[in-house]
Length: 470
Ligand code: AMP
Ligand code: MG
Image 1 (cartoon, rainbow, N blue to C red):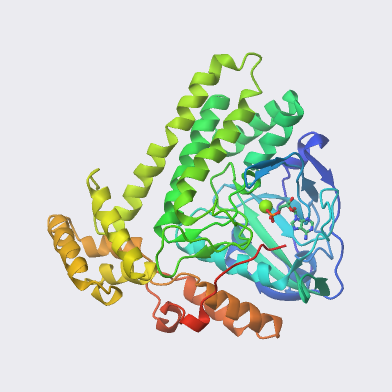
Image 2 (image 1 turned 120 degrees about the horizontal axis):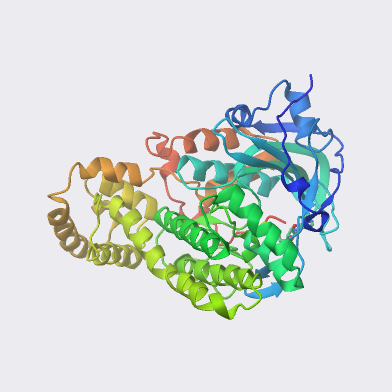
């Protein structure tokens, strides 16, 4: 049977300076691990059996209407500019207009080398592929804008990393793969025509109401402020918020060394390569402003005399901390049962987070317990908790149905690191049951009854560091 999809590839119609056209490098023995049928249906994919799905989403066969290409971009990595990155192990197969009317990219990750691979092999191993599958689908179920996972396929090939590991290809779906770094590459090269073309494309695709580059900047800043506040509200640490991993659409992208906090500490860092804590949990609201400043700088290159818009661009970026703060307040207030927060509620939230940090309370379980009435089991200093809880109770006494608000704002289950590691170890040994179990429980994060998966890691189960997906 032949897989069909209603491809309509707008990126491939842009000038060739934006990408390199190229087919995926076929793999030896494609074997399907997972296919997200609900998402596939939404994208209009049909007609395929398991083998055909495995063949297409491992790059062995290219479906009719696809126009595979590697996208060019640059980016600031840990603060330093890298003038050329690009899809080094990914290919955009093409785009479809999904059943919700939104255009979406279908991208293979791990599909072989491209002109942007630098020293890399263009491949991915099973661990990061399944991690991204689970975490991106969990984020989606949590209502957080994100790329999604359509398929994961074992390639039957060995990948050489720190050990010999099984290869895999992930197919991900995004509103687009435009990044801050896509703007940076043309701005840095002084390619004004391409930069203008890209700006027009981004506006048309994502923010059709935006009137010009500064309006685009304003829209991206708002989308990213909202996104980071949502990350904070579930204890998510992206781990590698480089500008090439920061989308224009406002979706979360690139689940390399990401992780969720177990016991709360604001300065938590998991990524093994983030030695200075640049992308620590508590730094995310600041880093997103830094990233938006890079987008602003790139957009200024569009103007013959950038001084004419410098004040406006500065004002937009400088407004961002307050936007993140407002979004943060609204997310966290809901977790305490407050639907319409007042500025002074920020202190109530911070006091709780400080107590949690002091006592090493589990982030997810504390808010889940509060949503169910009482979180004293999560604390050591009971006097301090009771004092805080009295003030909190008094504050929500006049709120309408605070428990329902809280339960809708605080998941019972998140993809905990130790569970992900356990799932990867099992999958490498050929057992996909833990993957299936996680996927199922995380699809229903607000009411799951899989209490075993709600449990924080024991000392022995703790995962101290996460590694990039390369
Ligand atoms: P990431 O850390 O995944 O955001 O990737 C940063 C850059 O390195 C991107 O340009 C990737 O395409 C590239 N890259 C990462 N892993 C590989 C690989 N195995 N082969 C080729 N390029 C890679
Ligand atoms: Mg990346």
